[in-house]
Length: 251
Image 1 (cartoon, rainbow, N blue to C red):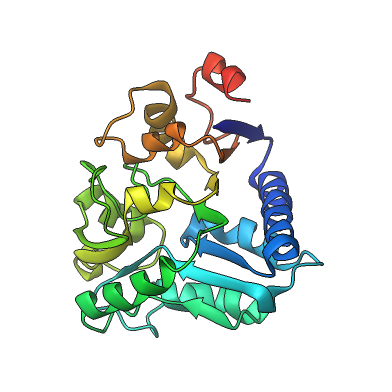
Image 2: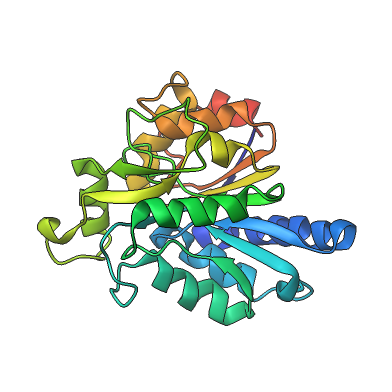
């Protein structure tokens, strides 16, 4: 794992996008296509804006898979991750091959269909973030580090739901769904490369717990330290509590 820290999140996003574009171009050159897992949420805004503006990526040769989605939320809702990916990635690039998690359909059917497509070939790169409670995708603590299921139905803890409220996606806590479909921890770790985007001071405690503390299901994203192809992108605000020795040893 490599940790990189930048003066601001716009610089961070540009470098992360450059790395991601290089991975996608290389996969397309070698195999004729690239396969990615896309994250959502406010932390991904600048990164996706930077990535979708870069030239030389044959998006028609890219397959995209969805990291997580609320159960019971229509795609028209402002907080829908399907809507997020349509507006910030699919429509901007013209990706034709994508697999979105439909939160209004039967979760078991959605999981079965998407898993079948996901497992058909290796994933070149996964874009992820880290939640304020240390979650990875919607795997809140204590996360399941053992299941081999590609996707699972999870119950969102209050800290996770409060983060969604705080980011402005919902008007009240009661509106935030209590269940979601999430890619599993082990499935995320099967990606060849992982690009982890974590800006902003509100993530500083989670960053400290993930990279200064023990690897534990109580801090789900700490498992990223076991993946040699992971690059974690921080800004000075999210890195403010991190032990300088940790930053130096992982850079």
